[in-house]
Image (cartoon, rainbow, N blue to C red; front, top):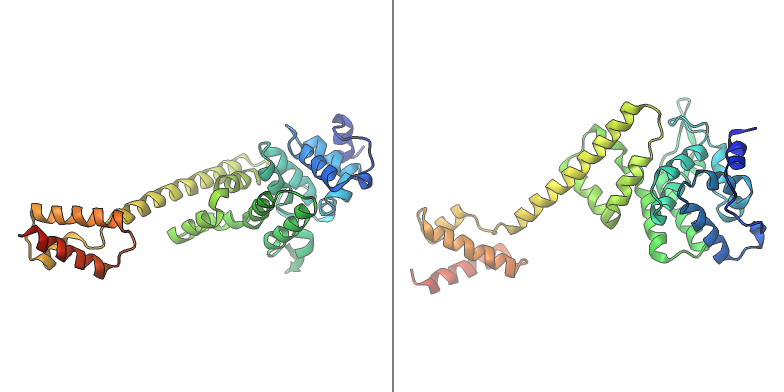
Length: 280
């Protein structure tokens, strides 16, 4: 008995006996959602593929059986995909992102120097994901979120080579409200049996999240700084170090909080007016 057949036989059926091609769009969507939200989707997913449901509902999925995975330990991309999906928590957006994250590999396969490559498979997969989920009638926001997870799923791969603060900010900005789900997908997209590699990957993702928090805090502090610093205040108002400089900086900080879009020129004009009105 093959591995996939054995997994199906050992897993109680969660699917009805109706033929896939007799289902409405809503019933197909509900069937996929049911599989996705299983506590452990491993068995239901293999059954979904082996019994012909995937061919009718998500035909891109069984196509992954023919795609050999040169990186992960699995003999095909489908086995890797199911393993990744099973590692995620039962969150529909996250599970669908995991299910579709490598869906673009068959369409982007090429060979260079005797090695197989899947250049831009995330971008291609995102378009395929959006089209398939729309056809199944999922809510537009969920469709956009899942497609975006697929598009960004490979972005983290270069982090170990060293990212600048600008690159870290770009990653967080592009992920937006999906930042947590994207990082969870990155952690789960590691099915190697090499425990040291798994630990290293998790540490890198943790480090990235810490850097994002640190940079966000630095940006908040920078936003709090007046456009004119203490040296500029002293030069402009002909002051020596002292309490008047502190009062001027407090005025400038309150001004920026109240009107954050003021230019430096307008800020200088307001400072001059404040100092004149102060009567010193």
